Image (cartoon, rainbow, N blue to C red; front, side, top):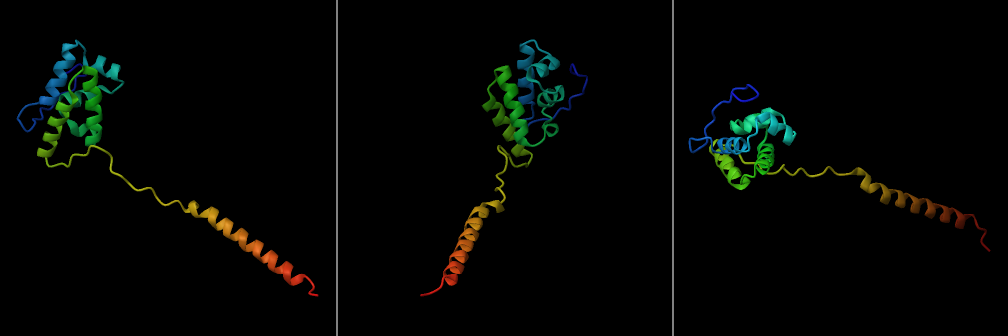
Length: 142
């Protein structure tokens, strides 16, 4: 049990050990900080700290969020994030999930207003042409 009294399920990595979680927990304990103190310093919910240390990444959402929380936590603890990320990616690939490092690119919807000014200009030219045409027809010839 942690300081938040939530049980931590033991989720094993592909190597059979909790590499990421144990490393983060050991670094936090080396600083002499509790989960509550750490969560207050990072402005995070203690559940996030517990989930990272227990490698219960499903609680954290998509892999991009897991990496974000892990990176912030690792920087706070002065841990090597690249090593932790590598282990997390290996574990994720072993589980069959596709690693998502960035949000998928969704093309912006077409803006129908982009044709507004050309349409207004064309309508203005048409009105001007009609005025000139009527003015030329109305003049007496000769």
